[in-house]
Image 1 (cartoon, one colour):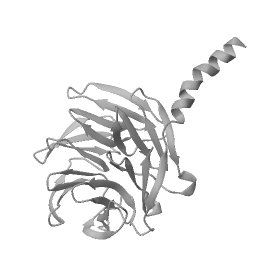
Image 2 (cartoon, helix red, strand yellow):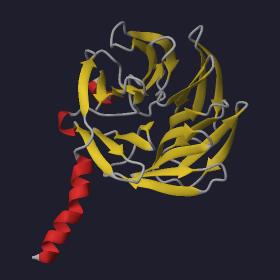
Image 3 (cartoon, helix red, strand yellow):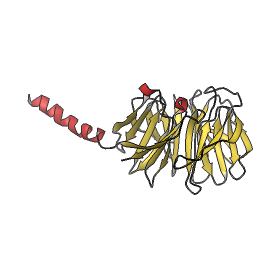
Image 4 (cartoon, one colour):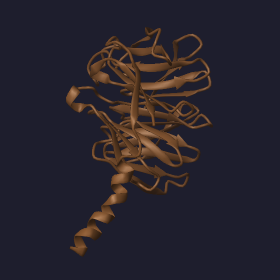
Amino acid sequence: MKKLIAILLSCFPLFAIAQHHQLEKIWQTDTIVAVPESVLPDFKKGILYISLIDGGGWDADGKGGVGKLDMDGKNYTGNWVSGLNAPKGLGRYGNRLYVADITNVVIIDIATGNVAKKIMVDSATALNDITVTDKGIVFVSDSRQGRIWRIENDVPSLYLDKVKGANGLKARGQDLIYAEGKLLKKANAQKQIIQIAEVPQGIDGIEPVGNGDYIVTAWAGYIFYVTANGQVETLLDSHTEKMNTADIGFDPIRRIVFVPTFNAKKIVAYRLK
């Protein structure tokens, strides 16, 4: 009996953590967003940039593009940028919007909405997420090759290899937070790697929410809260509704999570509580 009580007491902190955070839905668009994969907030303009696949997930069909949406879920523009293939991760530095598009990183001039340049990444077959440091250095993951590339002055070089299930990325100062399948990891400036946590599903989007904590998504329809000490709680499970949760955006001031739902073809906003 004493052993059973001890086991139950040891589980109590985990239960308390699992109930600590929640998501409150505040708005959603109609099903008018053409297979949204990534959302990137532009706080100065008050808009969300949205990568639109509008076709097969890895098809080089020219159907893809980038849309815009006000941060209150209104005034959707689905044709701001067109002629891409299967765009996924988005990153920004100054007037440049970086888009991962299968084998290329496409640079959009934000002022005009035109493609300014395409950077071909050698041997890449499935470029997925993108993040940009405060110095303008770009990191992009290749999910099929299991690689993470570093782009400086528009020149790509291999940064990490043999990253099975490489996907979500987030630059934090000199650190790179990245997904290796179900594992959330951190590489510092010297490429010393530590594991932050393991979640139940393969990680897609990664967003820091303060105090060393993160929100991460799994494409199938899960959102997890990961604490700095590696505890994991499930905030959302929408997989039975066939509502995907892809590469999220986050407003740290209002604590709003912007979720692109991929096959559900809408953007949903939740307040993190």
